[in-house]
Length: 415
Image (cartoon, rainbow, N blue to C red):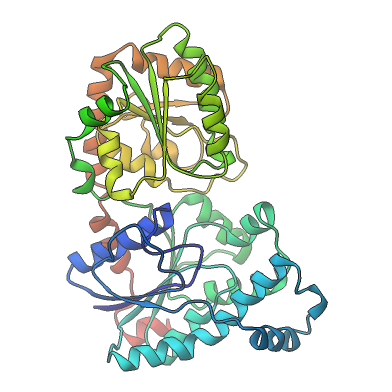
C-alpha cells in the first residue's frame, strides 16, 4: 500500500528521542520493511536520529497573529486572553489544524503521491486528518496512545476544553478503525463515546534487531567506574510519575549493605536536576551514573552494562501507558522490576520475565531488587525468557496486525 502517516503533534519531533518519536519512526520502518511506501507528514522534525525510510514532509505550525485573531473571531473567543500562553498555544494548534489540509494536499500533488490509506497518530485539537482522508477518498485509521484531553487538563492546563473534545469526537467517529495501545486507553474511548466495533487494542512493539546488541557494556562499565558488581538500570523520562525519586530512596537503602552496587539511570526530564543532587550526597556519591539524554540508537549498548532494569512508576488511577522501555528491556534480555499496574503485568510476567510489586511500595521494590541482586542464575534465566517473550512483540508483527485491519474497498469503508 501507499500510506500517508500523519503526525500533527508538534510535541512529537520525528527525529527526537521521546518514546512517541521512537514509536513514529519504528512504525514507519516496519511498514517500509513490509513493502509499503510511506509518506510521513509531521508538525515537528527535531534532530538526533536518522530519518526513517519514508518521504518526510515537515509542515511546521502556521499560526501568525492574523490567523490567531481570525480563529478567535470565528470561535467568538476574547482576544484579551491572548497573553495567556496556554490559551495562545491552543489557538495555534487550531490554526495549524485548519490550514493543514490545503498545505498537505498541495504537497502530495507536488510529489505525485496518492495514498491508499491515511494512518494518523491522534493529537490534541486536531481533526484535519478526517478532511484529508475525505479529500483523498481513502480510509483513515487512528492510533490513540493516551486520553489526551484528560491528560492535558490534569498536567498542563486546558483552556479550550470544548474545542478539544469536539475535535476528538470528530476524529474518533470518522475513523475506519481505531488502534488503542492498551486496554486502559480503549476503556477511556468506550467510556467517552460508547462501544465501538472498530476499536482494537494492539500494544507497542520493539525493534528486535536493535535490541539484540551484546557488546559495549564493558566499555561503559570501565568508562564510568561501575566495576564488576551488579548494575541496576533505569531508562526513561525523568518525570514525576516515572518514580526516579522512589528508586533513589530504595537504592540508598540497598547500597548500605552492598557498597559494590551501582545504579545507571539514563534519560532526561524535569527531575534530572533533583536526581543529580541526590547522587552527589555522601550516601550515593560514586554509585549513581546519570548520563542524561542518550540517542535511542545507543540505548541497547547502555542496557548491556545493566544486569536488570526498573520501571518504578508511581501509583496512578488510570495507567494507560504501553511502556516501550519495558519491552525494549525484555528484548535486550534484561529482567524487569516494575509495579503491578495497567498493562505491565502482561509484559512483566511474575517470576518469568521479571518481578512485580505493589505501586509505590518502597519495601516491596527493595525486596524484588534484592532477590535479583542476590541470584545471578535467576537473573540469567529471566533474561532468556524476557528475550523469548519479546520476539513475538516485534514492530513488524505489530504493524502487520494493524494494517490487516485497514478497509480493503469502498464498500467496507462505508460500512
